[in-house]
Image 1 (cartoon, helix red, strand yellow):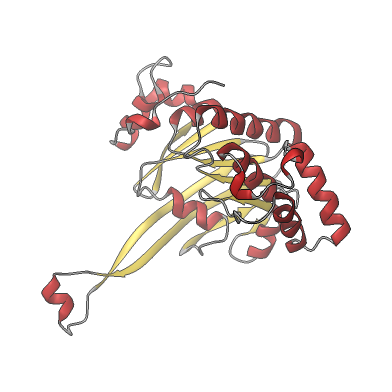
Image 2 (image 1 turned 45 degrees about the vertical axis):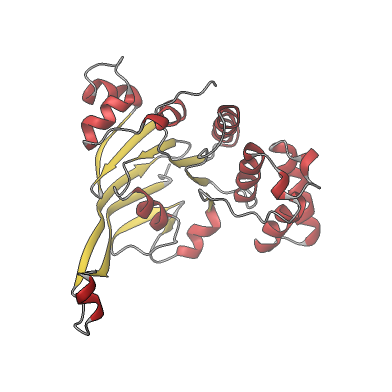
Length: 276
């Protein structure tokens, strides 16, 4: 069975201009360009049906990697196959087979839930009748049926996140990317999203690529964790393996392993547990 994601030597560099001093900025002297290596060579395999937790401190390269894998940003070098399609040669093929839920979501507060779902289906070239049918199916599956006539702006945080995920599932993707899916949610809503992610994998066989700063979330959901630091993969394995290898024992906290790998502590609010 081919992997859901396979990358080799994936990199991304950016060219910026040095800001210099205020005096320098006011002069006509050209600024000196510099190169920033955001991702320095990611070699990664994600198996079909796996929930992968992709972790790292701010500036480690995880967001840039996610944007490359979802075709939002072209790689500078390296190769990748995502959902059976070559990332660089066939980005359209990749987009047809993946779903993507951005951290901020993408719904219009003034638009009703059923309109968002139907519009998304039409964007994937479903007929009007097929789009209406798909809207009903997704609403029933993600417990949105009673909310279809409600404006998106009137939804709770957990309801809005379920809608975001429903929109990403419109075309029945094999691979789902979730970028910080529970940021800003209360503990009950977070647990609701967790149950949904597990169900997508267990009942539909969807592969899930999850980025999060919440280590309790990664610990609870992911089959395997990958920690990136300075644009490279610094460690990977199950939660128990990382805690045992880097935290000193299987009973150690995941935040201790994260600190040992990255050299950076996890902020206190990102260590708070949630009931599941």
